Amino acid sequence: MFVQVILAFIINLVVILVAMPKYIQYLKGINYHQVVNVYSLDEFKEKAKTPIMGGVLFVLLPILTTIILDYHSIFNMKSMIVMVSFLGYGLIGFIDDYIIVIKKDNQGLKPIYKLLFQIVLAIVFYVLYRNHASSVITIPLIGVGINLGIFYSVFVFIMFASESNAVNFTDGMDGLAAGCSFISIVPFLVFAYLAKEYHLAILLSGVLGALLAYLYYNKKPAQIFMGDTGSLALGALLAASAMVLKKELLLLIIGGVFLWEMLCVVLQLSSVKLFKKRIFRYTPIHYAFVLGGMKEEYVVRNFWLLNALLALLGLIVGLLG
Image (cartoon, rainbow, N blue to C red; front, side):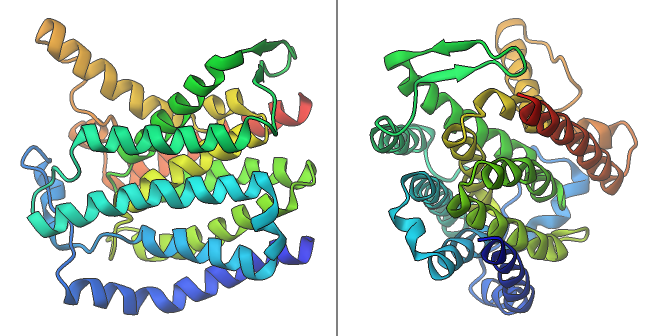
């Protein structure tokens, strides 16, 4: 299976490197581009004409590659439900992106519909998975298990909703969300391979290859954005991988940058609503650093570095546990 894991990475890397320029031209031709929010910082309003939906390629191709290289993956419960989660949340994001580009309005899919779709997918995940895994979540290092019982279904929804939206919040600068996602997926690839979950390892390796190729076109100045198609899918991929590998709480460490971004947004909105005061200069928090005088590319590199340190810590804790 090691050969298939490597091949998945190489195939996705090469195919997307070659296909992306044509895809970018296609999106420009049909006028599918970023719609900038009126509240966006002036420094980022110039990105308004950048094509979106780049996530379509790095969602579909890794799934297709996995099935071709290892058709048994569709019969393996763990890899299959991770693929379904990845594709399902990508579809929610695609609908959101489609509405944005058609209406030329940054609102997209109504929050209530987005929430309902996420609940449905969480239910699908739980129904498929409940007979194949324990409802116990284990605290890393100390090894204490907490049996959530029926409440594991609620936990599943929280995992999907929080992680997918956290990646979505992070996707605001060239290369930021893609780079952080790449770094965060690496530990789960290691966990999957060491646990002999080779079907899942092939999928994750394919996503890494696809993301690396996408990053080549998404680095500053970005030629394409992933859109909600990509960000929601990547968040779901991380959440689903963490759950099927029983590394749920490690995602808090490995995906610490995403958690930080989301918490800052939640705290800011809560403070403004309750006290009419801001806690931070701007949220998502990566924009606050730009307002503080830091160049966008330096913010991105520093976030990558922080994410790499957290991912390494999570990997070590996971291996020790």
